[in-house]
Length: 124
Image (tube, rainbow, N blue to C red; front, side):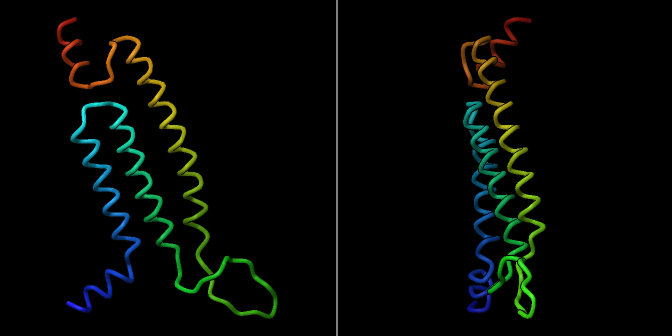
């Protein structure tokens, strides 16, 4: 039992990422409000970002700036660099989704997915 707790404490970044992902996934599945679905998607994206950055983390590691004559343990910079691209894509997708929700609200007068489905079924 103590061994499991020590491993959990040592890898708590992964645990937090899993908890955040589950919160975002639950938000997307349980709410019919489109804005809340976007918020859930953003929470899931944040969990993925945290997971990838924590993969590159090294205990006691420094920024990978090499200085001649000094030996250090360095943090892996690749996951952090990839996450910067991921953040840009996530912000773009969020902006696009919110613009679509604005258009949906202008057309249907609501942002509730269940009400939109009812309105669409009555139109056909």
